Length: 617
Image (cartoon, rainbow, N blue to C red; front, side, top):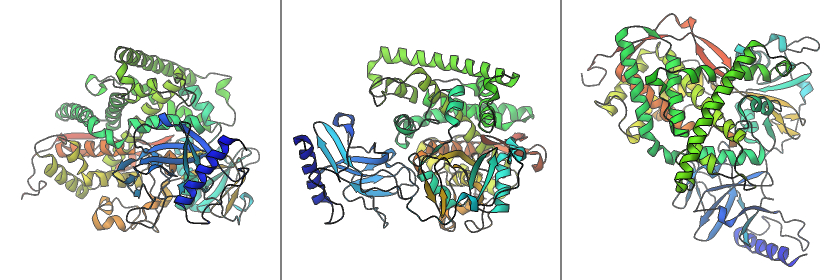
């Protein structure tokens, strides 16, 4: 054994002896065969106390600097598998950004709960950091009782399977209907390909938490997404995903929201003025289109540092181009044959033109951002937005990101920031049109907290809009805009629940059935925002509710999205009466990678002062 390796193993033995009880971890043998020291980073890469998200042999770990030295733990929160490296330090506690569970940085013990993070020996040597992850487990060591051949499935046709029964604009409805008929785990066939569909929340979470080591996005997604939008964090896997994910999470971190809040305030105020004019005109409006203006403006302002201002200028060119992307992606992912690569139909050519124009527009933003970085080199150390962070960052090999990766990530931010939040707000308006009691409570809260302001004055006031937050949560439970988690492939053989899934098994995860099941929620199909407040909040099974996904790839922008929704809902109902134009049956769910409310038109009227609503009668 080399002297260097013996020195490392000696250091490892000391750490193990000091940190673990005897027998907890087997000591390294003389030849080092039981040691799993993995070099994870150079010491100078870990600036500050952390938390730092690192990876060792495919395991996520979180590293923090304490008065006693570096400490390393399993990087997944035991609650829903969120990456703890995306959290923050609060004194001697590591705080998960998902549901704010707090863990001791000394012991890993959860504050106020029995959970404890698995600790990993960490060694500093020659200005590098080594971690032993041999004590970690993927948690998939269950015993299989069933195979894919044991699963029920809808009857199909030879060669085609069930693909002729799938209406892509109602794909989620097709899969949910089969789940009601065949149970929480079944399979259907796309040609010769079998797809396992899960709707049991425990099994769904198990799959989502086992990413990206055990399950990855389906193999077709990366090339399809790359053809259309470049190589962004959405389609990336492995080390490329981890690096890009860190940048996206940093840009959207909760600790930055205070500085971003004036921008949210500005765009919300602009939309209020636009709606004032439309209310005075008495015309009906497609409110989802206006909500997409709102979310596009916020996304470009916050993540790109560019004020496109479609709300005031009436320029919806960006939205018209973006709305071609998700439908095309859905068609291509479920195509038995990639015909678009051989023959370009008119819709393919329209998409090509739209993507070329979007790339040119984003290219101008990149040129401007590079000019700012060149003129002010200090920006590279403290980037003010996601675009500057992407341009300043380096990959694991020390190289700048390619233009294709930058474009892919900017497109990801645009698509994720526009559709999901805008559609959730649209569904909230639709549901509130039939729930005047909920509107009254929403207004009362806005009146009390906003006073004479149209928009919450500061982030503290916005954070107190708990009823608006409850409306958003209840909307996402009943009308999740991502009802199907992107179909996944098993990288290795795995046991999920009691089912053996061979390597290559394709899996689809449905989010709505569990969230609308009476075992998890009382009156599951009723719109009851109050279920998320006070004592009612503990009366349902929150683990069945995963609107932002779960596990390490949980949506990094969820905190910002909730803030946007609370801000918009409080502004809208404080200032306007909202009436749906047409019947409830005219609004339908349309699936194109996300689920939008099609046919939703409303009429706004300026709200007259109602003392009863203000709670002062």
